[in-house]
Image (cartoon, rainbow, N blue to C red; front, side, top):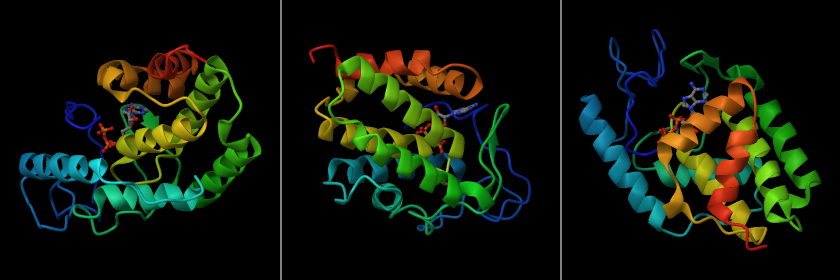
Length: 202
Ligand SMILES: Nc1ncnc2c1ncn2[C@@H]1O[C@H](COP(=O)(O)OP(=O)(O)OP(=O)(O)O)[C@@H](O)[C@H]1O
């Protein structure tokens, strides 16, 4: 999450049109050319935007884009728009750009069919919420900012479903390990993290 070490987690992309030529620094609104300075700016501005009310919506794919746009509007000119390049992290290759729109439609149709995960027990919500997060992460629709958008959206979903998240309990390293595990093998660890965030009170 914001502030996590980016060393081996950085996207690897050659000739990435999102970056300044010959660098891995993403082109950005204030035209910052230094990676560390950009990271600091990004954390500061997205934290500030994260404290503001989020755009309202129907918890749809369009709403998901609006949340990314809200968080990253000061940082990236493409905030709120799906990526057009292939990306991977470590050994995980995310959805090819030509399939993102269709995969997002399929995932959000599933979410609607599941009635936005309402009327579920805590354990049921955690299991379904983890599946939703795992799928979202496998799609990774944005060039940057997927983690923060995933969690912001899950928090909205959880509140609407009556299981508000206590995000102060989130341990970024545990969360990331569980997300990576969900990509490779099992969603169980991620469900346990979500359950811990909502508690067992209902
Ligand atoms: N090797 C990996 N395989 C699958 N998912 C990964 C891997 N490494 C990190 N992730 C997940 O990718 C998401 C982060 O994506 P991205 O870097 O686009 O978001 P961010 O908001 O910019 O970063 P962060 O979440 O670190 O603040 C997190 O959910 C993280 O757990």
